[in-house]
Image (cartoon, rainbow, N blue to C red; front, side):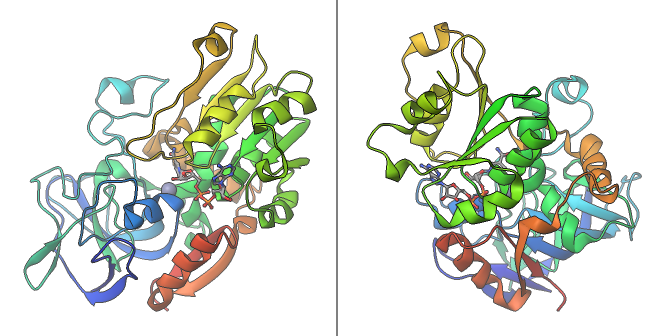
Length: 370
Ligand code: NAD
Ligand code: ZN
């Protein structure tokens, strides 16, 4: 079976014959049909501010069908249409039982583990040598093995070439707005970073009735795209001498009601926090920082009644809530097509990396079988 293997940090992936072992207890083997590239894959492939772990099969935004199930697996059958998710839901821990958390004790995102939980081994090998997994999904492969808690069964009629992007970026941004920032009707919302995650957050803000959505990005190309997502105003920090939080405070009479950071840049995270209004403003961090980043702000910014939050996967519980996000698409409450700007066959997967590195477009769908 073919997989796109990252042998070294920052080097083009190479499509190789890889053996994919059968699923063990509590595991399923998936046939991936469509996958896409999220910036988190790129950070760990570049491994600049992250732990390097190679050779590795990246990929976590994808859709496929169950090919086979491991011993004791009763809730999946071959042929089920599924989305693998980078953060799981065991269903039994205190987080899974809490209404408020999606940070499962067993299966929450772990970017440094490259093996399966069941036995601490990889299911991928090339000529007997193991290849590491990534966030329990490794979807840049025709077949992959996942823990059942990291796989959501979805409507069999949903088109996987579209809804695959709901398995990470779009649900993350949407949930960061709807479930965490929770803007009210008439609110002003700043969105830092206008990639797919940020524009999904803008979409969530729009659905919540926000009246002003201020998009912040260093890449002016993003502003054209963002107009299609209800972003009403744009700020490029490079156009101003003052820190962007001061620019936003001036634009809004003291600060925005909500801000959502989707860049992964720690300075942008600080600005996103400091640009919310004192007394009630809420900032939500979504971007994945570098390993050594430190968030620095004066404690008075918090004492003055600003709230700082963070979220993985928009606070959605992957198995419980993701099927419902797919239904939003099926019911036409949520548009997914506008996030898809490119599509390439699996053999050209490196082009998807080029687009993201150039800041061109939003999501690139990688077609596995064709
Ligand atoms: P992307 O590269 O498509 O978009 C990021 C955007 O941020 C780009 O347009 C870039 O120009 C802009 N940007 C970068 N630095 C900036 C700065 N200092 N100020 C303003 N804008 C800046 O990436 P994406 O796939 O949309 O992902 C966005 C972020 O969300 C990444 O950090 C990714 O790792 C993270 N992410 C987090 C979760 C989660 O669950 N928390 C899930 C998915 C992605
Ligand atoms: Zn992602």
